[in-house]
Image (cartoon, rainbow over all chains, first blue to last red; front, side, top):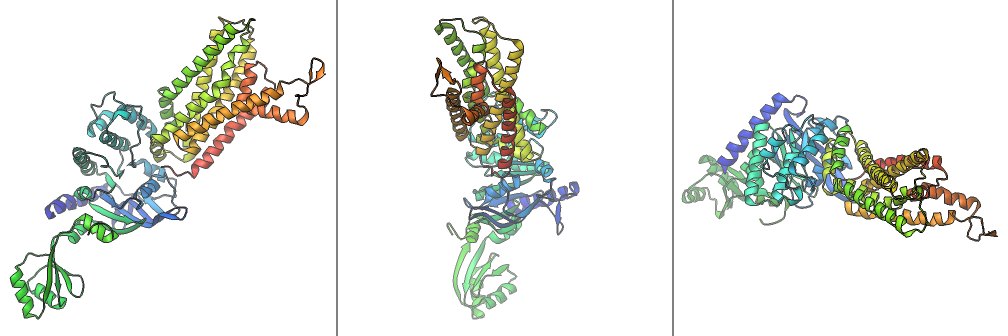
Length: 335
Length: 258
C-alpha cells in the first residue's frame, strides 16, 4: 500500500505542482500553495434545503482531487456552481485566482473542461461532429487536433456511428474528449467511471493519470467509487450534508489508514514509555487505547508491559481503507 | 456570441426537426393546392393560395423551435455553452436568433413552393409589389413566432415539455384567430338587414387588435390577401420579438441548469 501511494502519488504531487508554479504566476497563491480552485463558505439553498452549507475547499494546482461524498451530499451542486450553471446563494470561490464575481471569470472557465453527470453530447451527431461543434463553441480557429483527441480517448475508429448508438463507456470517453477540446488546465469530472465496465474503468483511470502527468492538468473527480479514487487521487475532500468534513492529501490519508495493531491497555502512559523505549511508532487514542504501527513480538511487548504493571486487555489488527475512513468521518455505512 | 451563433447555425443546417418541419409544411401546402385546384368549381386566383398554408405554420414552427432549442437542454450541451459564454444573455440571444432564422427559412421555402408551384395551377393575379409587401409581413410573423417559441423553450428548459407547450400555444393561437376572424368578417348589414352578429365600436377595435397581434390572425389576413393594418402588424411583431427576447434573458439569468 505504501509503495503504491507514496511512490506514484506523492512524487506526482510534487512534480506537477512545481511545474505549475513555474508556468502560472496568476494563480491563486495562499501560504505558498497554488490553487486551481478555492471556495470560501460557499452555500447553495434550494428553498429551505441547503445543498451546500458554507463549504470551503482548496484544490491545489496539478493535483488529482478526489471529491468524496454520499448521494445528495452536494458534490454535483458544487461542480454546477463552479461551472456557472447554478448561482451560489452566498459565499465565494475563485478559479485560478480569479474571484467568481469578476468578469474575468469567463476566461478562467474557458481554461476549464467539465463532464457533469451525463456527458453533454448531441445524440444525433457522430463523435467527430460533436467535437467540431465544441470547437466552434470555443471559437477555435480550425478543426485541427480533433483526430488526436479522438485517438487519445480511443474513439478514432467510431466513424459515422451516431452518439445515440454509443455505449455508456464511449459516451463518457467522448464527453472527456469534449472537455479536453479547449486544451484546459483544469478538469471537473463528475462520476467519470459511472456505468463503465472494468476495462473501461482501467482505461479511464490511465487516461486521467496521463492527462495529469503529461499535460499537468488539475483534475477534480467526484466519485462514489472510493477504491478506484484511492488509486489516482493526490488529494481528497470529504463532503457530507453540503459541508466539507475533511480535506487531506493522499500522504496524510496514508498515514491515517496504514496498518496497525489497536491495543486496549489499563494504562497508556505505561504503554507509551515501553513503546518509546522500543522506538516503535504509535498513536495514543484515549486513556486506554493506542495504535501501534511497527511490527513487534507480542510476547516481548506483553512482558515489557507487565513489568510496568500495565495490563493488555485486547489487541486487534486494523487495516483502514479510504472507505472505512470515509465511513468513520461521515458516521454511516459499514465500520 | 459570434462563436455560439456559428456553432448553432452549423447545427441548424443538419437539424432533423428543421427539415421535417419543411417537409411537413410542403406537404400541407401541396395538399391545400390540390384541394383548391380540384374541389372548387370556379377558377381560384393564385393570391388565395400563396399564403394559405400559413394557417398551419405556427404548429410546425412551434415543434421546430422547441425541438431545436430543447435539444441543447435534453442533450446537456447547454452546459458546454454556458461554460464558455460571455454571459447568459448572449447565449439566449444567439439561441433565439438561430431559432428565428430557422423559422424564417421554413416560411420562405413554403411560400416559394406555394408561389412557384401555384403559378402552374391557378390564375396568376398577383401584383409583385403587393406580394413583396405581404412576404415581408409574413417574414416578420415568422420571426415573431420563432422568438416566442424559442423564449418559451429557454424559460421551460425541458425539451418534451417545451414541445407540448409551444404546440399547445400554437393551437391556442389558431383557435383564437379562427374566433376573432369569425367576428371580424361579419358585415354590419346582411342583405340590407342589420346583422345581429356584427360587433362594432370598441369591441371591434379590441378584436381587430388581437387579430393583428396574433401571428395566426396575421396568417389568416395574408391567406385572404387582405391585410388591414400592415404597419401595426409590423410594429406588434417587433414588440413580440423584443419582448420575448427580454423576457427570456431575464428568466434565464436566474435559471438553474441541470
